Image (tube, rainbow, N blue to C red; front, side, top):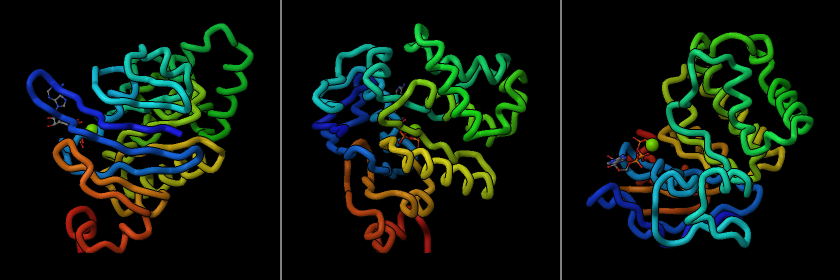
Length: 234
Ligand SMILES: Nc1ncnc2c1ncn2[C@@H]1O[C@H](COP(=O)(O)OP(=O)(O)OP(=O)(O)O)[C@@H](O)[C@H]1O
Ligand SMILES: [Mg+2]
């Protein structure tokens, strides 16, 4: 279980998160909804050890706050960041292998893992020697997710994976996320695409201005008037 308790985070004097508490059970797919600037990425940054925060983030029995990013990956919590953050001049293969940096002593394990990534995304095997920047947006998102999988996550935080993708590609992306989840990985998904995200998830939290303002079963939230008005339309 991944549990965030009373998380607060500042950028200088600006409070971006204020008393955020949320959790994901093992094997759950949990969505974090919220408009631009609500604080979704800040939650992930805190959990990845990329920005200092106060409160508590427990993964199983381990407190993650205060750990270095590499230690957190080693614990099994891996982030696929917003905007993909690939190295465009480097090959697809090298970008993927970057995700395995904490497992560099286990080359047999990494080989097995990258074969699984290529099985999930066959197009990446075809393009493994191409510069990542030459791929389509959807393929680049596959590289970003594949790189996160190379970290061998027990829980995966996906930050707006559908952003900027064409509708058909978005649909495939959500199917991929479901497949990863069904294979046993806990998923925490930050999305602005509320309808699609609620469709595939178990539970959801809604953030506004650094706070959780609503939470519930995804099916229920899909039918909630306030959610439809604010995040789905119609
Ligand atoms: N490095 C930073 N320095 C100062 N303020 C920041 C920084 N990063 C984010 N913020 C501010 O913190 C708040 C939360 O930002 P955050 O990126 O967590 O939101 P978000 O929900 O991920 O938004 P988006 O949907 O646009 O990605 C916003 O008001 C944002 O402007
Ligand atoms: Mg964000």
